[in-house]
Length: 119
Image (cartoon, rainbow, N blue to C red; front, side, top):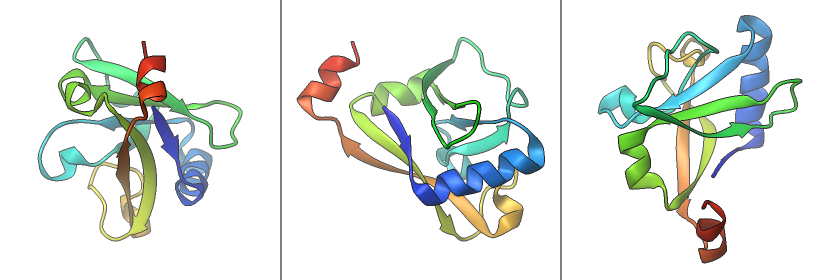
């Protein structure tokens, strides 16, 4: 399960206005690789090593897809993830970086009902 804060949704709308449709990818790497990265949709090529964990409704015509590496999903499949944005230096390749903010993941353990609903 993935969600977005109001502040992050506002930043995503701004980035979409400037760059067109966007997507997120959450890898299991170190450093910036552990942060959710925002790219123009299609610029980050996903493959068999990735899984689409959901879509963000940020009030645009089109939902924003969120991808994660399968190996990272194995660790996080029991969590509810929320993409947030905070002030600070972001990752060099993520679209928000030049704006003095960075996206981050906030998480909590899924309830039993939420976990069961995942299938």
